Image (cartoon, rainbow, N blue to C red; front, side, top):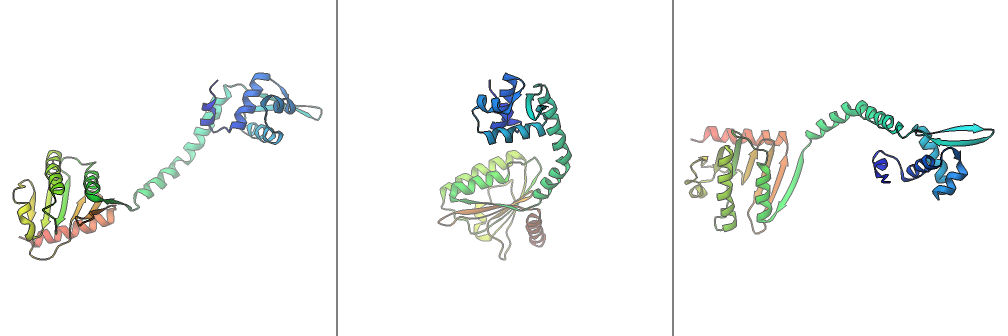
Length: 238
């Protein structure tokens, strides 16, 4: 018999052994349980006590001797219901803690060109048509074929998603964007942040140096801060 399901219910291996032994032999003394289960005396005593607490075995006294008996296996249903009841009691508090954890900042680091391309794909994995995508572009190495090949595919992907994309790029790299007509671009004549993308509650920072590296941060606060910065620059730049 596969008793692993009993482990899933939270019973220890010792409790399972004692319970199934009692099912097989019926009402008996603790000495017989020890003999039939091949368990240590202390382990049997601990398991019988815990099974009594869980309502899965009962005992009667004949003189000073206790005789143990497993309750009907159908009692396991009540045992499950009781565990479910306890979970339902603490469920509101668990959900409250989960909501609090969602407000915490999360950060991941990605290394190498492939790491950064993975990061940018993760950035838009929950995208829906009409979502806003903002980015700053500066100091991009146009001689990296892997990078340029990725952005060709990334442009197609974002276009198919129906994202509303606006970008701010330095004038030095304007030529990289002039043919990408579906992007709304402006080119400030003053310094701007380097290579930052903003999408929903996520911000990514990345550098295409000799050892490309990127950081993905999930934070409503940081996202709002960079969105406001972007919008201010966008408004003043004609």
